[in-house]
Image 1 (tube, helix red, strand yellow):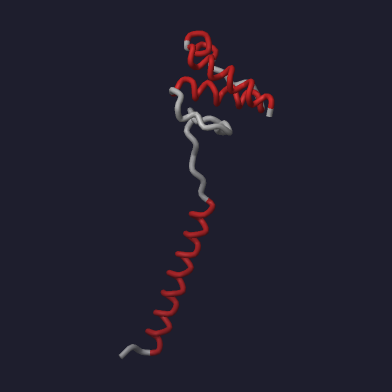
Image 2 (image 1 turned 180 degrees about the vertical axis):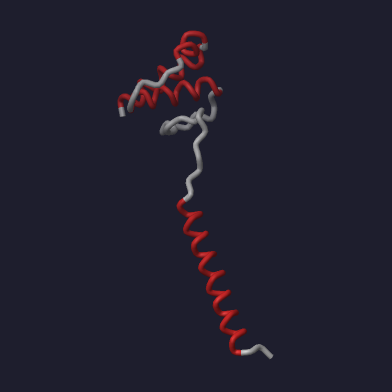
Length: 97
């Protein structure tokens, strides 16, 4: 049989556990996922799944350049035709929107 003092101790422990669970849920809800340095600021508003990676990256960079500050890998733009075409397409399409 549990004494009165033991019951009160159990209630306090349950309250502490519930409080910790609630606090950790709030903390998890406020957490953000860190972005990788190579990720683009925002994805373009089109489906680019049929294109190669260089074209998609160029399109994304070109589209973001049309919306805000210039974003272009100059070395890649001069040497990679797919990146260049993607950048030009992305820039012109997003500039019109």
